[in-house]
Picture (cartoon, helix red, strand yellow):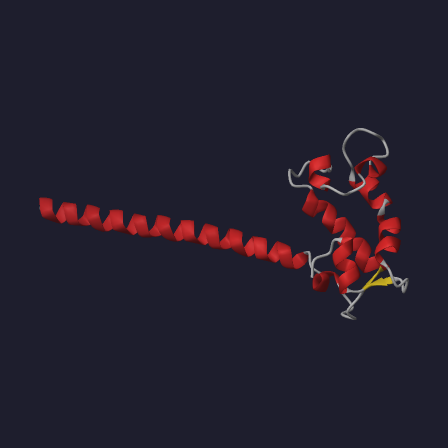
Amino acid sequence: MRVRRNLIHLVVFISLAILVGSCAHRKVATKQAEKASAKKEFSFSAHDTNADGRLNKEEAEKAYAHSFGEMDKDGDGYLSRIELGPGKKFDELDTDKDEKISIIEFMRGFDSRFAEADRNMDKHLNREEAAEFGVPN
């Protein structure tokens, strides 16, 4: 009787261990899939909705807005100097001088950034121009 009880406990323990292991594996796999999906969502192809191999101003504007969310690492709805990164024009974008950039302040810079990135002035961004604009291939 005691051996049978121990055997049942062993089977239950092994079953629980397998269940916990598979749950942990699923959680890791889900996180990896979410990261891969997020990277794909913020790509040139994902924003080239008409699939013409370039981003028109509307497509680029959506990509630019999406980049705000990508840069907002702490998810507070603002960009700090650190989140914006080196080489960016923080003081120029921070129009209310509160040491953080809101989405509204960020989007105000879109037209000038688009014009800057559109080197051949065709009112579209090709893959190279888009990469400089901040949209990964």
